[in-house]
Amino acid sequence: MKVLLRNPRRELDIPGPRRVHALLTDLDLNRESHLVIRNGTLVPSDEELLADDVVEIRPVISGGAL
Amino acid sequence: MKCRVCREPAVIDVPRHNANFCGPHFLDMCRKQVRKAIDDYEMLVPEDRILIAVSGGKDSLAIWDMLIDLGYQADGLYVGLGIGTYSDVSADYARAFAVERGLHLVEISLRGEYGYDVPTATRATRRVPCSACGMSKRHLFDKAAIDGNYTVLVTGHNLDDEAAVLYGNTLRWELEYLARQLPVLPARNGFPKKVKPLVRLSERETAAWCVIRGIDYLVDECPIAAGNKHLGFKDALNKIESDSPGTKTAFYLNFVEKVAPLLAGHALAPDVELHPCSRCGAPTTGEICAFCNLVEVSSRHEPVPVELITGKGARRR
Image (tube, rainbow over all chains, first blue to last red; front, top):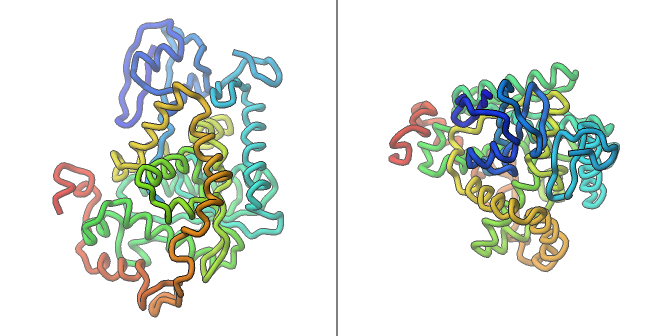
């Protein structure tokens, strides 16, 4: 599957199928600080991602001081 | 995974509630959390004239969307900070959101109206970048709310923001700051009432709100904020949260309920006499307020491109 990552923006090819939580673990990403989006739709952590999916892993942390 | 409410397929799991939700029921959960924050802390009344500090990011656009969705009338305020392309793009998102929904967005440009931007102020003051940025925004948010006769200023601080600030202040036992870290600051001495209706939602949840509602927002992080202490505190708390869901919620909400009342007497100089700044009229303890001092120092400085603040050697000033 194609996986789009941010900060910095990059794209990875990762073998599928793979569950969302396993993908995040493999990439050393915390579920608390990321959303996983497939074809514009959110997917929960037990969803199985397939080899031909295009997936965005979107960080949700923002951080200036106010 | 099935939605806890309707048993249809879930789109998001929310471990701190030990629940999964489909899109519509996730949105309902968010509305309930914001409504509870507004009611519990007496943040808003239906007649309020609301000004929302809008950055073009997920939190400010989510709360603007939620408040309109809940029936409030709210205008947005965007401050152009001059942080290169990042600011240009963030303004585009804020404007597009307002235009698509027929909402009113007030805009202020630091460079256009005050003769400086955040990278230049950072270099001119020789302080950490978020310091000049935060001071500028706080002053201009307050001023716009007062000048525009708004009854309340809304900011998009979420549960993660508040928990991270609380964590940092607790590590240093900063009692004065802890005492005023509340979801509502009442109007006083020329300052507007300020409220944070997102304190019961995590930033993963505000981001999910935007995705489900189809709100385009600036995903990329501020290039200057990268690596700051605040982000480090969030990272530490999220590691704890992963092992023990609900910890951030308990840490912050129990602080507000149980500890903040005990610290009421420690608030920063509650009895210090404030008077109008001789230049801008904002409340201050000195003759000239900190913002006017910042403007004076920064507007005299040669413009500094953001790359010099974020690039190699940025700390050598």
